[in-house]
Length: 305
Image 1 (cartoon, one colour):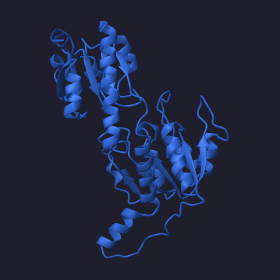
Image 2: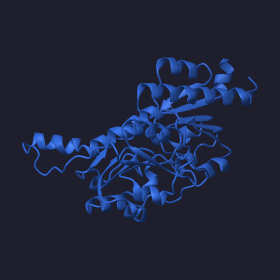
Image 3: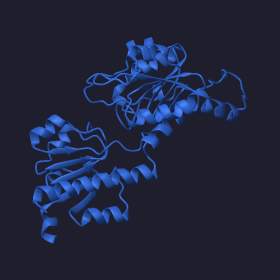
Image 4: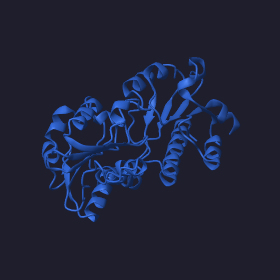
């Protein structure tokens, strides 16, 4: 076992926090180093057979993975790294199953409630001694149309909560499949009072929602994104919010993270959170377990263990 550990050097990025039990599980198979991959030198990166990550790795960094055989990504989508470059370097990429659907669905509705009920604006008013001055009537969710773009496990969990609140759910058909009763993207945008994004970025080279799609939405609608920042053109969203086209937006994901577009996130009708919809003890534990088990299984398969 000791010899096997010397053969496989595994780097775990600083974005992944493992419990003592999880560290012990990983260290029984690999020699492990916990590090900030983005701050490592090319010489350091060249030493590892395996990387476990949960952050975007630029091509210039990944080109130093000269010894790497496997990258495990603690996410369902593998768009944290270039699949083309991984293939060129002979690196196996593997994400984990879609997990945390309840956590993300709950967070989605936290953003919906925060925007629809003007929670932060109301709190600011109280703090500033303004009481109800300048506030518009809140949005009552019962009876409203909830447009869901992306109907995987998370989209279904969101729909379930929406129906429990008495909302009418509208499902946008994907390019590869359609649910019974689903509508086109355009129809969902035109008919929905609240639109929430849960689509995959796979196959999308341009934002799914840009100026054209935003113009299709109802005046005074709300837009929520807890999927991927690249699905939404943030400059176009900012323009739609400033013009009064949309009532507000709730965002947990951004084109680049950490996000620095203060013009958007400082708007009074925008509620932002730092990509933490999935970030619960239960989901993190499940994600870590899948990440480690897949890495160990890959190693054992490759080495005939």
